[in-house]
Length: 238
Image (cartoon, rainbow, N blue to C red; front, side):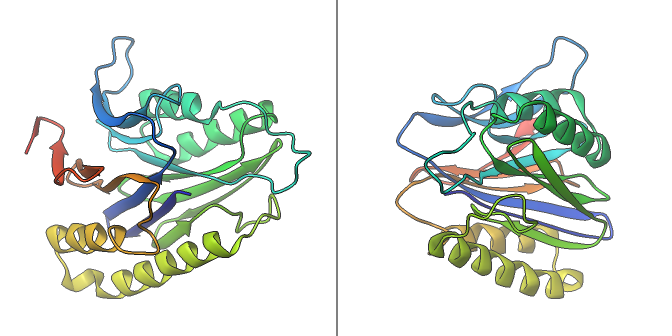
């Protein structure tokens, strides 16, 4: 039941997400690349291969939400999304190349669990929706994007009342945040994002981690369970 959002304006870009999932061990890890890729700081859990979401040292951020078919007879079979996520953060440095990799992979793996992948760098934000080999993407140089657990671009008809409610709350929050952007510094924006993530309907009994990514500062503010908020920056933990 994850809810994700992104906002960008004149080189200031932020991601925010609540990771909602069954009760598996969950945490954050700093991965060092030994194959010429990019180091990355990522959200991982014991039930998923690869990684769920994160930020790499090149300044590319990635986060996902599930978007599944509501029919019992669904082509979704395999959890490859998180393997794809790991490859994107290891190999890509810009939104354009990451979107291309996501689209190519989704078309080549129609049995992959459907979802939304949101990407961000200093200049752009994007979301790619994929299901059953179909994929649609939206890229913005200014503005905001939000997703819960249903398709907005029409790759699958899967709205639910709960997903729409969380999506609309995220849209309303980002719309207001974007209006205030010129008057806010980075700390103000991060604090507002942290606050909304810890409120219903975005916060629920399945929320395992909340996080905010500041692309410009290469900073991740994250919370796991009921533990205090922590801050990671490339170059050291604050």
